Image 1 (cartoon, rainbow, N blue to C red):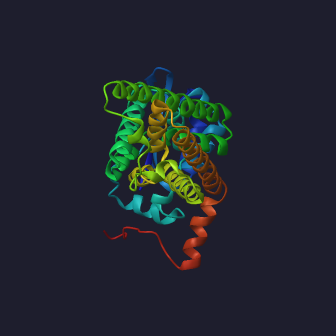
Image 2: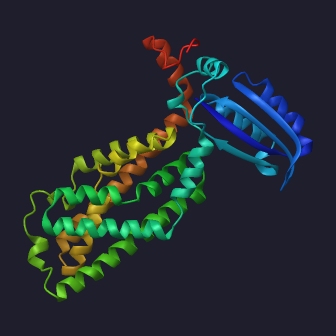
Image 3: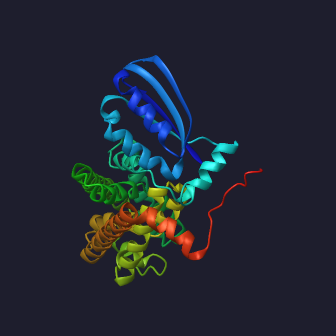
Length: 325
């Protein structure tokens, strides 16, 4: 699979940028339209590059300060059914599905660390579902609450910020996690207090044995192990843009369910429920950030080597469409 780059280039950089694109062994369809860009004024340069080599080409463009003085747009085509594309896919090391474009990772991380109205609404709704799951001892509702919860985007952003040495990003991510969970827990606590006033919730209901959902506020060593595994899986899915994998991450950790149980514990002032839920919430977030950071660090430092040497060691070749097809 190829990646399409659409570049807005100041006239004095056009020659250098064109030489970079034409000279790169994994590019094709290099085009130049002089003077067609009005805002900012400049030339339009486009090319297609093997996804595995897109990151290295983008770093070259950053070295000539195109990211500061011009514009870089990355697009992924739905298909590239031509011979040269297949040749470039065979030439580039690794598999396109394993390629990591760090500029895309960073952009996703900043987006995930941004507080939005929809983010807060989704988290509040997820914590409400989690609280209902606790009251009804419903494991199905627990899963639903996990899927609705948007918090992993901020967790992944914190891990990416550490690896990319973007401390502002790390701070934004941690503030978002703290602020959003505090807000969601406060909202659900108020709702639970109102339900308690009308008799829908009692302290006995919150403290009752819950065989299906009791794990939410009983953290143990396995809670931390699950958080580590889920954080690593989520970080890898972020790096290689496997969004479908993220659903599995969401339903592996008990951050949102713990927040729902914490809100109920506050509403009925059950200190055991409060402390257990808070511990579960903290363990999950810390575990995911730790393993996500370690996984992304490995990808950042060793991923091209791992992809190339795995093929050689196992005698494998990533999927390639034959030149004749």
